[in-house]
Each structure stands twice: as C-alpha cells, then as structure tokens.
Length: 500
Ligand SMILES: [Zn+2]
Ligand SMILES: [Zn+2]
Image 1: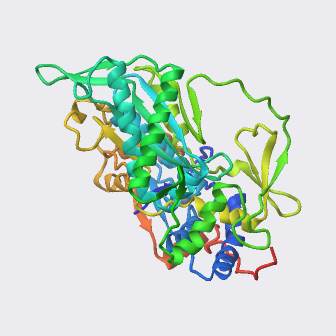
Image 2: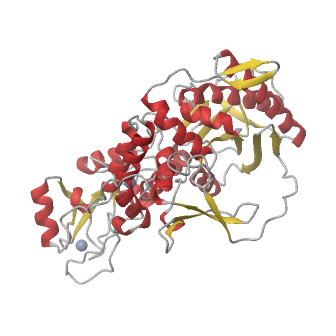
Image 3: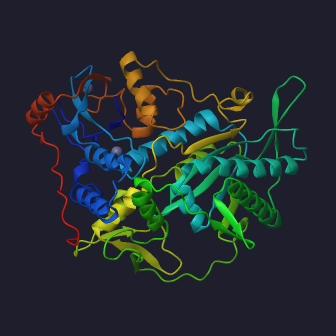
C-alpha cells in the first residue's frame, strides 16, 4: 500500500454524498508533464544516443498517476453515518512531485522534532560548494558520505574545543539534510547540518549531560571553512577524483562512459549552471525575467564565511525549548523543490518559474520552453536508495547514547487498528530515516490535517478504511457511480525534435 493523497474536505452536508476533491490533473505542473514528458524523453535519447536512466522515466510515470483516482484508491467510511470518502494513492517520489514533497516535509520535520533532536540548543550549519563540486556530487552521489564525514569531524572538534574539552572527552550529535536544489529548481547540492550546539559528557554513572558551546566568532568560522576545504581537497585527491597539477586542482575525467554518463551528466551539469542541456539552444543560459529592483550587495553577513566558491553559514540557532521554531527550521530545510504556485504558463506557452526571492540583479522569474523545463525536472530526481538524511554522533542509529538523549515523542493518543497501523507504517516509510511508527489517526491529523476521528459529515463518527480499490473494473464502477471520470488523464505523445 502507498501513502495517500487526500481529497479536500467538503462542507458537511446533511447525509448526501458530497464529493469534492483536489484535482492534481488540473495543476500546471501536471499538465506540463502530461503533455511534454514523452517528447522530452524521446528528445533526450535521440540527441545523446543513449537511454535515459530508468529511475528518471519512472519518476515521470509515477507523478502522472499521483493522486489520480482512476489509478486506485482507499475507501473510507464513517462508522456512524456511513459517509464515504475516497483517498487516491500518491507517488511518494522524491524528485519534483509538489504534493508528495510537501507531505514528506511535514512527516520528516515532525519525526525529527518528536523523536530525534534532543531538547538542547541547535545550530544550523549550511555548507555550499563551488559549481564543479556540485556537478561531481550529482554524478557521484557516493562521495556525499565522505564529504559529510569530513564536515562532521571538523564541526565536532570545534564544539568540543568551544565547550572546553579534549577530543575524547565528549560527544557531539547532528542531523544532515542533503538538499539537492536551489530556489530556481537548479541542481545545487548543499548540506544543511542541524548540529547540537555543544557536546554530551558522561558522568561516573554513565548518564550524559549536555554542555553548551559558545557561538563561533567570524574568524573562527572562516578558519573552520578553511579546514573543511583543505580536508575535502585531500580526501577527494586521495580518491582520485581531483588531480593536482602544477599546484592547481582539477576534476579528473570520469572514466565510466556508460549510458548514464551520456544522458544524465549533461542534464545535471546544465541544471547546475542554469543552462540548457540538449536541443538547438544547448549550452545557452535560460532566459530570466526581471521584475524587481536590483539590490545593493548586502553588507557582509555575520557568521557567514566565503572562500573560493565554498561558503559556510552558521547564524541560525534555535534555543533548547523552542520546539516550534525547530520544527519550522526542519520544514524549511526539507521543503520540496517545486510548488504548483510557482509555475505558470505564459501566453506564448513558455514556462515561467517564479523564484522564491528575487535575485540580487532583480530577476524574479526564469523562462523556459516546456522541454527545457522537463530537463530541469529530470535533473532533480535523486538516484534510488540515495539517503538524503544522515545522522551523526550521538544521533547515529547505532550510537550507545542515542536512547538516552533523543526525545520520547508525544504519547500516542490511541492504539491504531491493525489495518490502519499497516497503512500508517507504509506512510511513514516514505521518510528516508525510517522513523518509528506514528499512530495512524494522529499522523493524518498532523501531516494531512485530516481528522480521522471526526467524520466531516456527521462530526461524531470515526472514519475507517473499508477497502483498497485496485482493480480496473471496480475502480471504473465506483467512479462512474459517483459521476467522476473513470479514465486516467490522457498523456501527450512524443513529438519530433524542433517542434518545441
Ligand atoms: Zn506524488
Ligand atoms: Zn459520519
């Protein structure tokens, strides 16, 4: 079973079967993918002579089925009044689906706050990388792990010192979210580390106590970034990824020349630098629209170091008991790459992607042809099994101190029924960190803002899952009966290159 896309609640009506649902097929992003995905895939494969990786094609397919009742649904019924609700299945993908992305954001943030991050101060350390390294990490995601190890070692060492301890006298802890995109849906792999702002020290009885570290100074931050860069370069050179020549470092030519490197690499490289990957305008920059006044270069921000295209930012700190702000921060750093509101079509059929905040030069929108936009979407899809959340130090899954420091979470309000529990388990599985099971009803309330315990129709009954409807004939029968379209939305066929 899969996570659920929920129909919008209708106003309570008296007994009549009211049915009002969110219609994903009417969103601009859906319609763009529906019309242009096939052309994009054909175009990308024709111009590179290689097959686009399966996981990218699957992502487009799954997105087109996400939230569409004609592909199957769960049926819920109120125990009191018999009110029926249908919940369509969702794609649960991590690439560009805005609704699954938003749901994952809520689940992950709730999980981190309730079950992972202890009640101690937390500082956010953001490390951005120069463009060649972003391209490298996109192409070789296995390098993210050693990169993170370097960063965590440097930060833990710093915190131990700042708290007045020697390297073996205490334990740090952190959660890293590997973010793969910037505000222009450009591929920009960077690291958001939520680091406990101090260290744990064990007493004679083995019980850990937390000792806060002071805030770093700007000079310390600069020195930390310098250390991170030196160690990263050393690590990458040792692995043969960087080549040193005449005192300069270069990226080694990747030797693998498989199908993937021919299709995926140009897509990723183009998405990193805002360029167009294939087609007549290949290599050119995408157009931008300026609707805002250019900003003056902001004065140097506090606690933000920049060296050679790397930057380290550490100004955001959350106090021990400000769990609300912590959850907001967790949501911010796990937010999806795209939201439907930011995508619109111009009268000329071009895609206008609104930036979250205008760039310094006043740019407010990026303008792309639908095919160029599909390239951007494809580059956002993470490789399967690439874990985007990592836990370090006392928060590592096997750390001895972990059970002693993590919060126990709010008490489950109710025991979920077996059937609901199974579904809830599927829902939380979408989070990479494999969180503990959260009660089904509570999860729906918190994440979907859906109240399973109070029927929207009578307000008294509890909603129960009565069936999972997966067979075509049954799906068609029910949807037809409800006056809904029993057929999935049609998909656009691949059009020849040059028609875009
Ligand atoms: Zn989805
Ligand atoms: Zn009811």
